Amino acid sequence: MRVQRRIGWIFAVSATVLMMSGCQDSKAARDARLAGIEQMNQGNYEEAITSFDLALDEADGIVNEFELDVLKYRAEAEYMTEDFTAAAHTYGILADVDDGKPEYFYYQAASEAMAGNLDGAVKAYESALGDTSGAGESDPDRGKEGSEEESAQETDRETDSPQTEEDQTEAAQAGSSQEETETSGDFSAPKQKSIREASLSPEAQAGRSLALSAIGKAYEDQGRYEEAMDFYESAADSGLTADLYNRMGLCMMAAGRYDEAISYFETGMTLNDEVKMPDLKYNEAAAYEYKGNFEKALELLRDWGSVYGSTPEIEKEITFLESR
Image 1 (cartoon, helix red, strand yellow):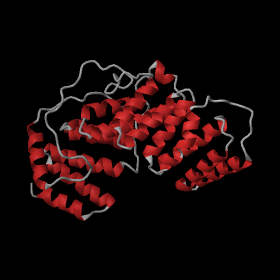
Image 2 (image 1 turned 120 degrees about the vertical axis):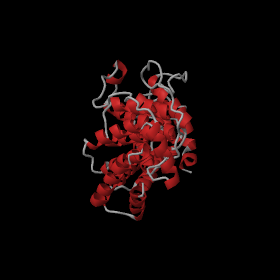
Image 3 (image 1 turned 135 degrees about the vertical axis):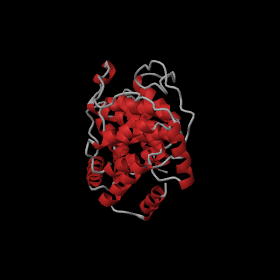
């Protein structure tokens, strides 16, 4: 593994005080760094990681701006190859040797969440906030007055794919008898940033947003929807995206709160994100189906097929809805 291969150099780095010295790293080290950057620009991330490892091997052994720069590039390349465990490890090294800057912890948190290590993700996120008590796990960046009553209804819908017809019928019946719930918040515009958020560098802001979304998704995957929404709502403070609206909608739909889910999907569509639009439209149709409004779901699904092209799965869904 790449993490094991670099372990000797890592221990040396961890034991070294960061020195912005005047020493010049070797030409071989500088050439390897430039080669890695060019490989990244071409999308050859695995080759780039090899070049950055070579640059570190050829460096003078003093942790200075050159080594930090190479480590940043390597962490990004590891993330892009979806080697999230390695990326989290590299960002942790950067935090250790470069004054614990928040952006390193944020990117470490995102990497840990993507690697499936939710506890590690929350711990890194709290480190970015300067909080190691564990108190911030479900309360990111802000206090929350009270808590909404958790929904007793759970669904098996963990992905965007349709469930079986029997599951859909049961969910629709449950949805039709459920009382209407009010939207828990208005996310049509970013909230005012706290003093802590406003003081973050652009790089740290980007890392924070990525970490919040990734941790929210990790909670969602575990069926912990209220905690997921806490992190999604905090991510919304930094700016709303169609993907974030889609994730919040799916979260609400999984919790059985279909009207809120539909609201998020519809608002997400107003951003005109061509990449996420098919997901938003499909999930809107699914939410109406789960709610028990088969006529509206059928209308939306037919429209989806006419725009994006029908598939056997879509045709099966249409046939099912036509029989309701």
